[in-house]
Length: 144
Image (cartoon, rainbow, N blue to C red; front, side, top):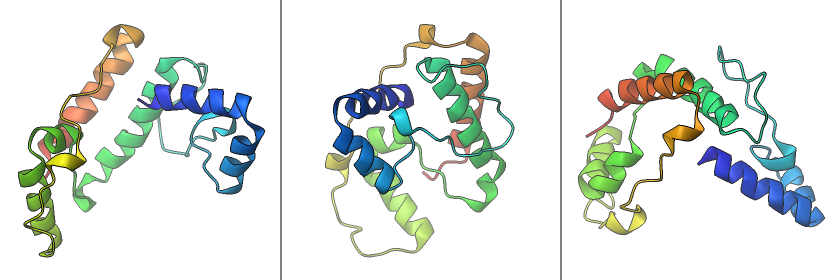
């Protein structure tokens, strides 16, 4: 998903100078020609090309590794839970946040049911294993 976004923005930036200027002006520097990685801890992104899916997996590991190290201070919600059971997941989150407005809302239309494609063959097996471990750790802590 991160890699797809980077490729989409790279194409937009190459084709339309206005989009490039606009994104720079609003500080949208996550993807494309303007990419400036957030300085998460530990994981090294060096050695990977921005167009390599492994760069984006290493970046995900850096981001979610930081989240995992601070999970005690956060409420975690997985995309898988939002897709499979949007109403109970959102109600549980609202309960944890002490929110009552909108509890009777139908959240099913907010989340696409089908999972994103997961082409494991695109990734370095060691990176993929580490990402799956981090996701598993976070999923164990998820609000349900």
